[in-house]
Image 1 (tube, rainbow, N blue to C red):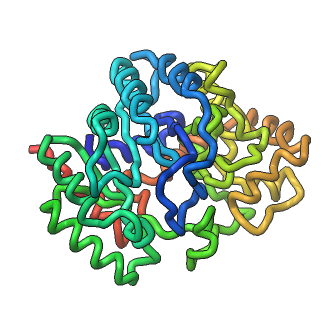
Image 2 (cartoon, rainbow, N blue to C red):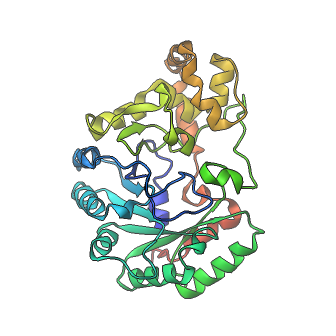
Length: 347
């Protein structure tokens, strides 16, 4: 499954599900948004297994995206989840730091890599201090030779970053333009706070529909939330973003809550700044920061619920959904064409 085909679902509410299988990682990248270490949180696998086992061909996410930390530290869990998701008709993708690239994957890691439908590898100047780029590209080349679908997640400072041009040239040459490249800018979260040149987006009192409240996320302990912002994942999780827990709630319940909860619908339609300005006490300095404090005022949720029951709100929701990014717009315009590498054009 090509990355573009996966991203085509990215804006659809509950069209996908992120599973953060662990916060542990053997790497020490200076920009890590999760501040992962080998001593970080890792909980029992049972809630993740239970949630994916609740998928049915009739009620399932189109995409299951496995992340962490480093999800391939739990390769047997990755294999188990991918197999169960496939039975229900769900595509599975995985993002890895490829810590094993130089020496090669162990048999269990190799099985995990081949169990999923798409493997995305992180490459950036921080990873390269611990995992050589050519070693990662060698692993991706082997997967491509087997007919597997792969991509590169490339983090850069901006389009004028010399590293960006060097890395893209190398990736395209080595993999013969067969591997899409998803470029994102270094974000000031986690350990990246000390590295990024950009700042988090500011909240506005004008409608700014939230693009991060489309796919639910099962975080490290199995709590399921409505937002994939790292600030929300790290917690404390505000009540208005909680959708349940993988240990007790199946996908049918999580999906229904993601689609119908008034606050989540309002975030997708208006964004947190508009909600805070209209029904709260005003926004904070940042877009996500404003969202995280909406539950501090117990009256906000009731006011928003009343608003979302007004006639015509369904039409506004549909308009906001229509304006959500298409697959190629999940990256900045200078980088969008790199997503198309290796994508077969229909005859």
